[in-house]
Image 1 (cartoon, one colour):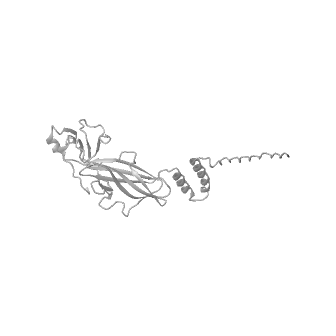
Image 2 (cartoon, rainbow, N blue to C red):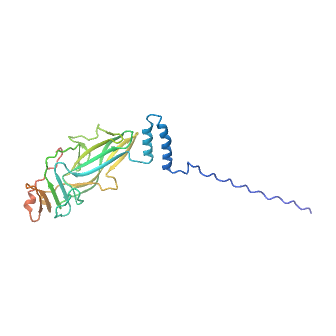
Image 3 (spheres, rainbow, N blue to C red):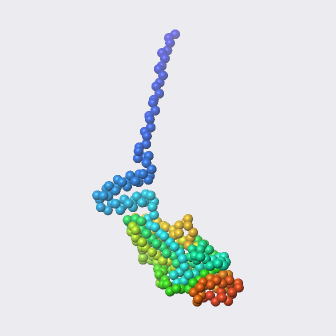
Length: 275
């Protein structure tokens, strides 16, 4: 019987080594943006009008704000009115900064907008979000009559309205037929006077901005910060403690349980539109 010839073992194919990722693929987004900026800046140096676009595009890549919006709230320019829920028997050292107190009757809010792009940023609209509605504060009232300052309000906000809308002083929605356009570094100040006759409110403002054809929204104050807050006046005799500026130029304190007549005699300004 003839022996069968042995077959040579089959050779295994060598695995194809994987190509290492390119240097560009290994770069982070931030580094890629920087490289793109350097390259396009070189072009911008010789092509007029390109540099502003490059600058905006780079800020967009890093999701930088298209506009800064700073805000502060305080009493009306016409008088100082503040109210607290609790009874405060000692005059606060800094009434406006004391966290126990909020503006009463009227509140003045100043918005300062600053453009952060070379392309125009347009403010199209402003809406109001009521975060909380409570009974008015009845603990402590601080009231200082007008010292003759004028009211520079450009926007009036009635928080008691079924759907509060910022309106121009004198009537009509503020942004009807009116838009605010900001360039880089340009500032625009909006003074808002809010008012209520029946409640304590917490609220936020929502600004609708347009930049390069797309709309964006900015919330003021931002979600991570406390909202704006103010309260209505109540009848003077319903407060438990008052500090009122008297004719002698003194902020006099009154315990309203013991000095009912003095507290009832406090004259508070009427809260109404168009003041």
